[in-house]
Image (cartoon, rainbow, N blue to C red; front, side):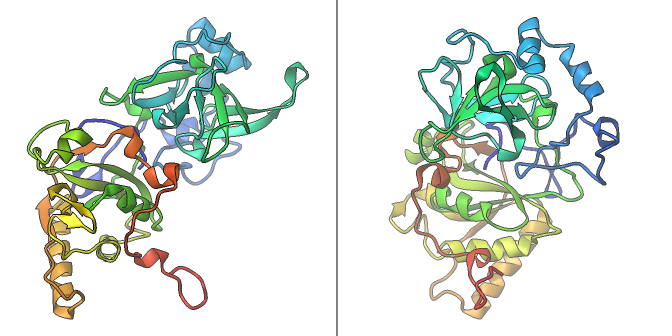
Length: 363
């Protein structure tokens, strides 16, 4: 799930994730490369290249050092950047345009003197080009939206990517998890095309990963929902005193995948007949639940469960709770994309989008 961590209630209106945009399409796109609409990343951010004029306007707010690094491909001295030793959980954004570039979950100590990451926040948020300056052949990385120089990427990083994205602190702005995120750095979603759903089906690691592979799903994030306290931590939830469920927030395009299709996959990837557990994981945080964003989702979920019961799909009664969604509290950074970052698989059922037809093509 990948979204910038935040400990605030996500605004949902009629099942729709509402967010604004900093960059009006018609003002920011280069007329020579204009397309019918903005270019969106898988994480829901507008990465349409900004015009040179707009970049110049944004650059006026930079300090001399930030300007030197981002606009003239400068490099700050090793061990001098203010973000080299930052260990807090959060996200690193482009200092020029605010696009999220790297997450603290992918940061590691390389010993080089520059902030280092093994993967970007979203691969589409950075671009790579050949750099043969200073008598060396390197791969330069730039912000995909404003083309700001960020640093270089090398093939000597840790698993699972083996890459080391070596960044200049001056090219970044760090926002700690829980702190307010500027509008320009938030996902840009259209209220008429993007909706949000919430599911709890046991350990959120595997549930998040399964939903992230569904066609039409834009973003998935692990978190805690429908408990009795605010800002819960993993330790709090595991102590069984907060009443929260391990849940996932699924942002999806209903034109490509319907809420009912998400429900179908949800009931395929977990066992809805197990009360307060999934397999070896026991406790109320592992309960089966659907947290609905509006009455339309609630009615659809109730009808779906009723239909499953009538079909006799399961040998035991379905115990899935259907409740109005309360505050979604994002889980700690190390829980996000856990299956991808660790390679550890959770024992879940197979949702329809991962099943293979006789022709070998997923249906």
